[in-house]
Each structure stands twice: as structure tokens, then as C-alpha cells.
Amino acid sequence: MMVLVLLSSCGQDPISRYYPTRLYVDLSTHIGTLLETAVSSPGTVVKVSLKSYNGAVQVVTTSSTGKSETITLSDLEKRYTVGSSNIFYLGANNGLFLCYSSWSQQPMAWDAQCPNCVNTNINSPLVWSTSSSNEVVCPKCHRTYNLWTGAITSGADGEALMRYIVSYAAGRTLTIGN
Image 1 (cartoon, rainbow, N blue to C red):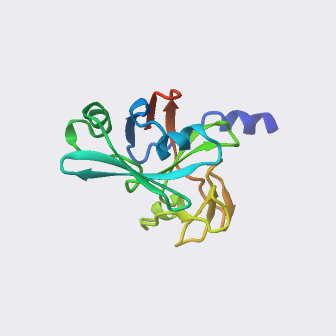
Image 2 (image 1 turned 120 degrees about the vertical axis):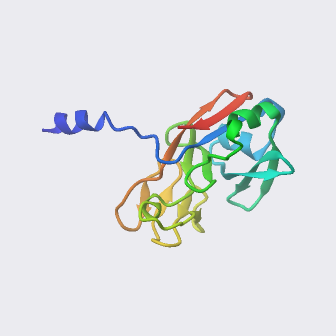
């Protein structure tokens, strides 16, 4: 019986396909940024969003301590990130949490919306936990999520955080998508 449970869970895709997500950043031109630190240093977590400013696309990163930084994407980075449609695709509501997971020893990207509330058509952006820099809380359903694993650490049972694919070549490129 245990073998059947293990085999049946192998086919589940851990990557969220519900909300299109695309971000490409050439980190060799953005050295020392919060974005680079988040994917290369265990313990650093940032919230990432995109905005348009005078025709340029900017990546806004904010740490759990409130430090904020804005990076303007090059034409190549913009072309991959928004494509010809010139529309942002970054999770359920233009937001991700990005970190280097101490648990999996790799960069991880999670949607910044509560997966349990967004599934019931409630817009509920996750906020930083006041007790841990690697946890976020849903202000609507009060679930707490771990950013190393995506799992619920307190609150009602439900879905884990929505995860996205992160490809990172040290000191070179960062790609997040699904």
C-alpha cells in the first residue's frame, strides 16, 4: 500500500501553471542587488514585482526588513519578460517571493498570493511574518507559510504556496517562469 502512495505522488507537478509567470534578469549587469543576493545567499528573502515607468520595465524588490530596490531592465531583459504583448506576467497578481532555500539548497520562487484565498476569488497578498523572515502570512485566512518549503506552518489545512521554476547561473542570469 505504501508503494502505491509513493508512486501516485511522483506524477504531481510541483510547479504552478495557473498564472503565467516570466522574468529574465541578466545579473552580471545588476551585481550586488537584492535580487542577486536573494538567489545566492541563504537567508535572504525578497518580494519581487514589476512596474512600468516611462516605457521601461522595472523590477522592484523589497526585503523582509523593508529595504527596497528598483532595477530597470535592458531591452533584451524586457523582451523576454513582457514579450511583444508588453504585458507583465508575474504570478497571480504581479508578485513573487524569491529566496535561496536553506532546506532545498537552491533558489525558490513562490507566488505572493495566498493559494487558498486566490482559489476562492479572494485577492489576498501575503505579508511578511513578524516572527520569522522566512515566513509569510495571509491576512485573510491567517495561514502562515514557510518560504524555504512552501508549506503551511500554522493555520488551517490547505494548499501549499504556488511555486515557479527558477533557473540561476551564478553571477549571470536569473529566469523565473512556468
